[in-house]
Every structure is written in structure tokens, then in C-alpha cells.
Image (cartoon, rainbow, N blue to C red):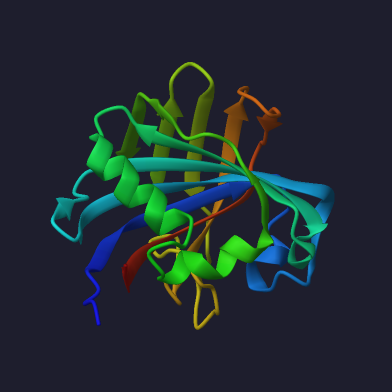
Length: 205
């Protein structure tokens, strides 16, 4: 018998895609997204975490996704960017989490993925001003995610008790605008579906 090492991570997970608000695929992959292809990204900010003895604190990741309108059909294409300050050990840890090798919440998504583009290290900048979050990567991605206005203008618009493998069960509904011009496609959104939540993941490897 060999003992398994464990990992855990906490931080911010946010996304923007070309769907109208709200993306049907977010609630269940069998629902049809707005367009023939759902194009968007996940932004991940690791506030803290450990993968065995490797610290994940402060690392940033962007995953560009290209999925069919019926997301449950599979054939997803993912492109992953990790901030250039990551060490080789940190990159390996993050890739193991995101490709499901280390178990945890991302393992469920692996059966839907047809192709993973090679991971790239780039300069990633992120700022969180509460009502507005800004993300940039190299010279090919600029994105802003902002609160939607609710009846109470001082409160977020929340989705409660949702079932999602990678998000918290309570999420904040936003709108986002993104310009992405790197391979394998271009993404240009303007005030489309966006979302963020505070994640808490764990697993073993």
C-alpha cells in the first residue's frame, strides 16, 4: 500500500463567455448555450493552497474554452495560461489539478475534453476592485467583469444553491466584456454572461 499526498486550494474563480445572461450551460451541460459554440474563459486566482509541499499562493491561471452548444456532448477544446512567475513545480501542480490527475472537482470535466493545447506561461495581471474585476494576459487578452445592478444597488445579484463542480454553490452573477486574440480563435464579448465565486477545492494524488 502507498499513501496518497493531498492538496487543497482556495481563491477566486470567475468567467465570461459569449452567451446571453445567464449561460444555460452553467446550470446544466445538457442545456443549449446561446450560440453554436460557447466561447469563453475561466480566470483562477489562487489566494492560498498547497499541492503536497508545493505552495500555490498567489498563482494565476486563465483557461480559454471552446465547447459545442450542447456542452454535455464533449469535444471541448481548452487552452491554459499560467502566470510567468510560476515555478516548474507549481506549473506541474496546477496542471495536475486542472487535468483531473490529482482528483478533486476538475476530474469530472476531463471526460468532456477533446483537446488540450500546450500550457503557456505569460504575464497575467489581475485587479479586484469589488464591483469590477480586470484581467489581462500578454498583449492578447483584456477582460472586465462587473456587477449586475440589483433592486438593492448595494448588494450583489446572487445565484444560490446551484450545482457546479468547480464553483461555490453560491455565486455572483456579473456581466463581462472580453477581447481575446490568441490561437485557436478570437473572442469578443460586450456585456455578456459573467460570474464569480470563492472556490474551495481539495483532492489527493
